[in-house]
Length: 294
Image (cartoon, rainbow, N blue to C red; front, side, top):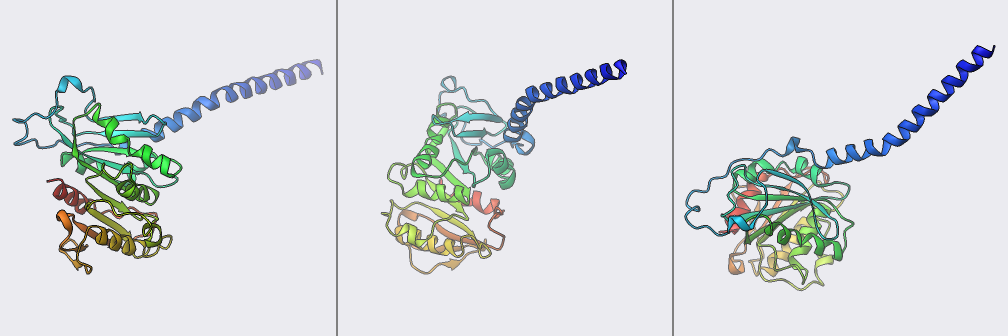
């Protein structure tokens, strides 16, 4: 009987020790899972850009910039909003690159947004530097903080400050749109391409129009969370950009307003996916941004 009691004590002690080990290792395991889920390079394949005709006119002094080429994870704003940076594989630190900042929807983060949008390879091949930002609790303050990302990137990589673009989905689209009309940030974007943004005409009508800025509004006819918001916001932007009131369908399937001031292209691109889905018209998006950056 005594041996049975000893065996029970040993078994109980072993269980207790294993439990203590598990409790000790669990936070470490959770940290590793979070780290690798947020900064996973599986969907971060970058392409090589063509610098033909640009190398003769260097625009940055390479020695003053320490940003690495390829994939860089875990950069942060002063208030702690994390973002990842993707450059062309053959990144040239003397050439000023267009910058595309992609903002995340609620419930997502920079890694998930990179996977969902699948923009990295095509955008870097087209010569863009791309940044994917986490989703903060959305407010005017956090939106302004998102607007600091281009300036922070320009301290490490060669960025053309006249070709800074914002896109994003749902809350990310809302933030991208707000950055273009908020008084403290409206000078930053050269163009915006919000998707499924949760802003309608009622939200916009009390805001003062910014100077004309190219806008490509992406919204789905099957977006039941924000129904017809895209039609309303594209109309508001068309008014701000002093366009003709009636848009016409163009070859890529979008509706384009004509006669806009300062050539500020104003498009409404309507899809048929559900609210949670990225529209997936990346070629059209990149063509729009490239054409506005010329």
